Length: 277
Ligand code: BJW
Ligand code: ZN
Image 1 (cartoon, helix red, strand yellow):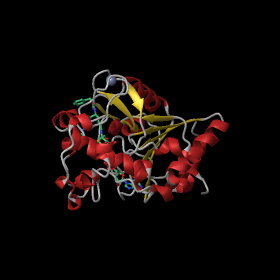
Image 2 (spheres, helix red, strand yellow):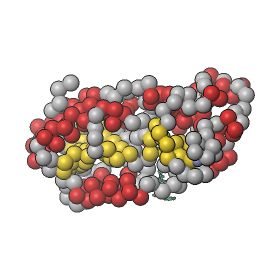
Image 3 (cartoon, protein in one colour):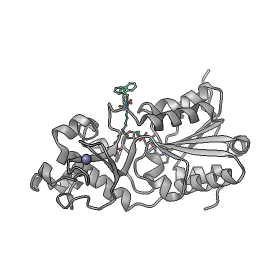
Image 4 (cartoon, helix red, strand yellow):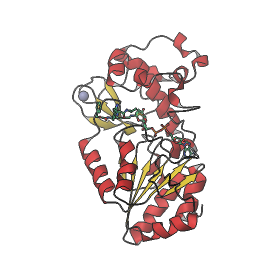
């Protein structure tokens, strides 16, 4: 028989107040109200491009300039965005938990850095971050928040997202003009986990441990289609622990989830966590 998860804030708060080890798993929807496009669905980043054209190591090998244009656009949007009420509520709730000796962690699929900028401290960035680059040769990982990251990318990338902007008429960027490693001068790439690449093993181990030990999981603004993150919340539910989903969607992702709060998480999440903003 289909069990419908509860949408009752009072019932959720009873569970929340009892929990000692809480994990919040977030996806692109948590940053949507900061103006950062989600990946899938209407208005999603992938709508005019196949993900495999832009977010795979093969795409970078074939056309590093195209991939860098895409990431220059993404960096520009993310660096000019601000954390929204959902990010801030999570950061404030982590602080409350810390004061009470309870554990609160964020596992995010997002690469925009907004959880940390909102003040969250226990954050695992599963898919990397836009603020870092990795050298294709010596593999050194460096922080780089220069914007643009190199002169050749200034004003570029918007035509990838919106073909009417026609930046395909601009001159092709040569590989030698793309961002370079400060140590060995080889080409660098965004420090992002692309399709078909393994996640950082330490980050993945830490995430798995949280998933296996938490006593409450909040799953916020994710379509739950990309692995391994997609299996985290169902794994918690299979252990018999409560999972509370916050999504625009009316329908829960998994009938084993205990709670489903439909609507923009900038509204539903502060209300559920009892944070006044
Ligand atoms: C709101 C809202 C609001 C909106 N309030 N809600 C079969 C089984 C298992 C694995 C695979 C498989 N076939 C292939 C794989 C591997 C692959 C995979 O999972 N593919 C699937 C598509 C099937 N995974 C990988 O390759 C991973 N590596 C790996 O598994 O290594 C081992 C391996 C290697 C080789 C083969 C097989 C295994 C790596 C995955 C890396 C994902 N990278 C991306 C791109 C990064 C690039 C970048 O950011 O530039 O990460 S994909 C993209 O999707 C991005 C996101 O982090 C990720 C998840 O998306 P998310 O966050 O869920 O966003 P959306 O847009 O999908 O959803 C938004 C949601 O928010 C929606 O539900 C809205 O309703 C909601 N929403 N506004 C509340 N205001
Ligand atoms: Zn190098």
